[in-house]
Amino acid sequence: MTLPSQRHLFEIPDGITYLDAAAYSLLPRGGRAAGEAGVASKSQPWAHPRNQAGDWAERARSSAARLLGAAADDIAIIGSVSHGIGTAARNLPLPSGTRLLRVADEFPSLALVFDRLAAEAGMELEVVPRPADGDWTSAVLAAIARPGAAPLSIACLTPLHWSDGALIDLDRIAPAVHAAGAALVVDATQAVGVLPVDVRRWRPDFLAFPTYKWVLGPYSLAFLYAAPHRQAGLPLEENGTNRPEGRFAPGARRYDKGERNDPVALPMAATGLELVEGWGVAAVEARLRAMTDRLAAGLEAQGLPVLPRALRAPHILGLRLPGGVPPGLVDGLAAQGAFACDRLGALRISPHVWTEEADIDRFLSILSGLLKG
Image (tube, rainbow, N blue to C red):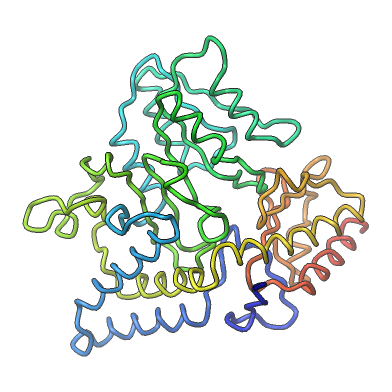
């Protein structure tokens, strides 16, 4: 069954066309209510048993696990994706003389720590340049199999490029990484909740994602999947949550952050995760694909270039204009109640389940007027 518009679940005034979910999703009404209840519990803690926060932690952890095809024991609750990638970097070998592979213009949370550690360890950092035809998947596969290259030991990848939604097909790439004997670290920030992320298919060593984008949760909360054979490592921090009674917690819980049982963020996160679960990722993907297809058709009708459908994600469309995003364009859109953003010279347009066909048409009309002006 087709997922209908979920606009009624969000606080969106008339005249607002918000197509910037890839930056910062809206919070659903239920998530706001959950957060407000959490704030109230901190105002009068005697009226709210503190063990409820622990219950919310396991509820959120379990929902995150189901979205990844994982077990709850494989999931750590962390503060950010950079926390998760830092945990991965701390627990993977970095052999001198081998390669670390990533794509160009990667998001800092995934790139910075591994770039630094690779240089310190004497590894070769191979950065796959942006392909002229937009086909990242073929470019990454060619890099993995490059004749004469140093052995590949770690690939740090994402399922799509964060700047413009160009696909990086891990269903094809992950088997090649494993065949090379390398570890796979995945930043799934722009994928979980929309794309069929499945750790059973990709078999990453570590995978992280936050709640504040596609799963409709709060800022400063994220999840880390650690493969079973990576669950005996050292966390970035040691606290009473991940080392109860001085012993490391079992499974990926040993990587849980300090002050984990946040009475505000956890209920908000669980509410958003469970909403997405209830709709089903496939239904969300289909709805958003319909929105970006409509958007692409409208842009092409204006003579503007878009990636071929097979190379772009269903929920993010990056419009690359000659010379980049014109100065003042993003502000001009916002002034008329239409919201997108400039990411590395692309106008990144990203609808979510609150988006309706009228939003797409309105955005196209406003954009056309600004570009002609």
